[in-house]
Image (cartoon, rainbow, N blue to C red; front, top):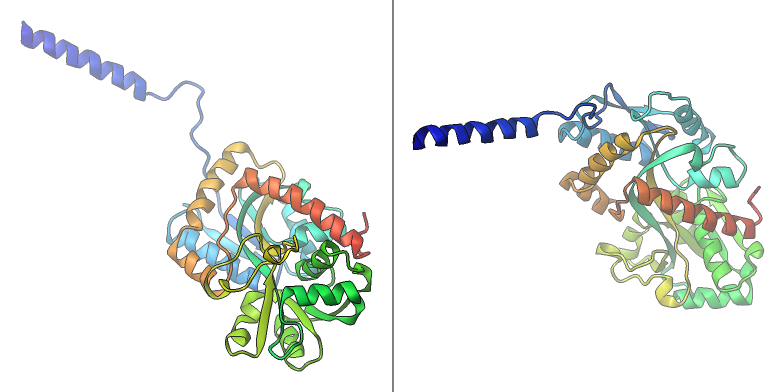
Length: 332
């Protein structure tokens, strides 16, 4: 009798567990991509954004972060607007992504496109290249404070150089510093070159006083003592090769500017789709290969999920609008 009672009890428990394991009527499984995934790169093959996109593609497939094939599509031209428009034309939500930068915001502020980030769905921030300010090793400008003093005295007396367009994050970094210290922002003299390499050459040749650039373009010159990095436009001091470089904030100037690496999706991407991609990108930035690539390019491995990316874009759009207005470039 005891054996039979124990057997019935086990059957009852097993039946109860089977009901608990049974799918709830009407409940849908977690979303997953149903077809190929496309990474849209708004620059040409071989560019920095292209290398980033292809690393994302490789890790998604090799690490099986995504079960569907992932392809890279280059849509260069128009300062990023061609790739942006291409994304807005996609109706297959959750399967197409634009790997972009602050140009997504500045193109609208500068009047280059009518499409804004609000016409898309933010997915992730996957890194940031903070702008650094460098001078020649023999420059009389030894520190950020020296540059500030020069700007306050005569903003037009300092020659800056940057790549590769007015109104980009490098130009905005210069404007942020000038605006923060009360210098005449519209008197700034800025020379634009096609590449960061040309910018570095112009400084080494003594043709300009200060350059604003990604750290990866100048750190080798700083290590060989041909240049001096006087400030980095980050909120906190960075690590690695830049650990000894003071931030503008440390030097009393509240200026932060970076080439943020963003991932955007088409408008209409669902909450379930965003939840899936939040998980994918959170795992992607933890891969050893991703971290190694970030270290090699002096990129800060910063990650924000879709909700936090939207908040950051809201704040950044307002900040960039104010600075570009001060520079006389905003069309809004």
